[in-house]
Each structure stands twice: as C-alpha cells, then as structure tokens.
Length: 185
Image (tube, rainbow, N blue to C red; front, side, top):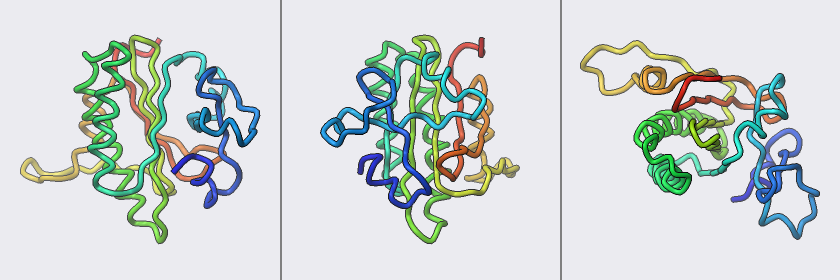
C-alpha cells in the first residue's frame, strides 16, 4: 500500500516528498512511484530536520505480527547499504520494540490502520520514527524481573541516545522516535 492509498482514512492529505530530491513533490500522478511520505516532524522542527538527515527511508506495513521481522530486515539491509552496520543491532532492537508497540496499538483500534516507519541518517547517527494511528500515548511499564513483557520502552531508553514521542499536527495518531549513535549535537 502506498502513502496515497493509506491517506484515505486520515483527516487531510499526506505530505509527500520526491524520493530523488527529498523536496516537496509536484503531486502529479505519473510521478507517484518516486514519492514517499515526509517524516512527521514536530512543528518547531518542521522543515529544517529533513536537511539534517540526508539518508532517508520509509516503510509502511500492515498491523500484523509479521511487520516486526520485515522492519528488522529492512533496517539491517539499509544500514549495511548506508555503511552503518555497526549501529544495526541496536537499531534493529529499537525498531522491534517500537513496531511491536505500534502494531499492538493499531490492532486495538476498530479499524486496522497501517503502521509507518522512517529511518533517517546523517552518516553517524540513525533516527527511527514509528507512527501509529492510536491517539493513546506510549506508556512505560514497570514489570517484575521475571515478567516476559513490559520492558520495551525501558529497552528503547537504555539502547538509544535519546527517545521521545509526540502527536503530529497534521496526521493524527502518534510518533515515537529514537536516536541511535552519537549524542545529539
């Protein structure tokens, strides 16, 4: 499913970028194959963040358990291609946790909206953004030592340099993001 088809259930259009240039697209139907949704950044960093992260990838998946291994494989291959394989293990684990939470949040809704993941890099760091349509904020669970679940956001906090979440102003739902690599400059 491409970003245009998935936008049918959202309030308003999905912003698109030309995948070749990263800039806004002209919106012509014949260029659709070159287009991808722009990452949903916070309002105060709306436009400058795209230039800060020249390497970008977008993946939209159904809210199914198979979404998590698909996303992990995508991360592994992409970071190898970007020559950032040393960040792959940490990035894969963070993506697993964030995507698992997004899939669960989407499955709890009365319709099954997709989950979306953006990977961005500046050749030193990787920024992972995961969107789901649920308006519920992520909740960090405090589980017992022998519990099998409930440690996802704790792992994200431990592995990533920074992480947080926000409600995007133009698409509903929420975005949870994490940075892997060196400290924020």
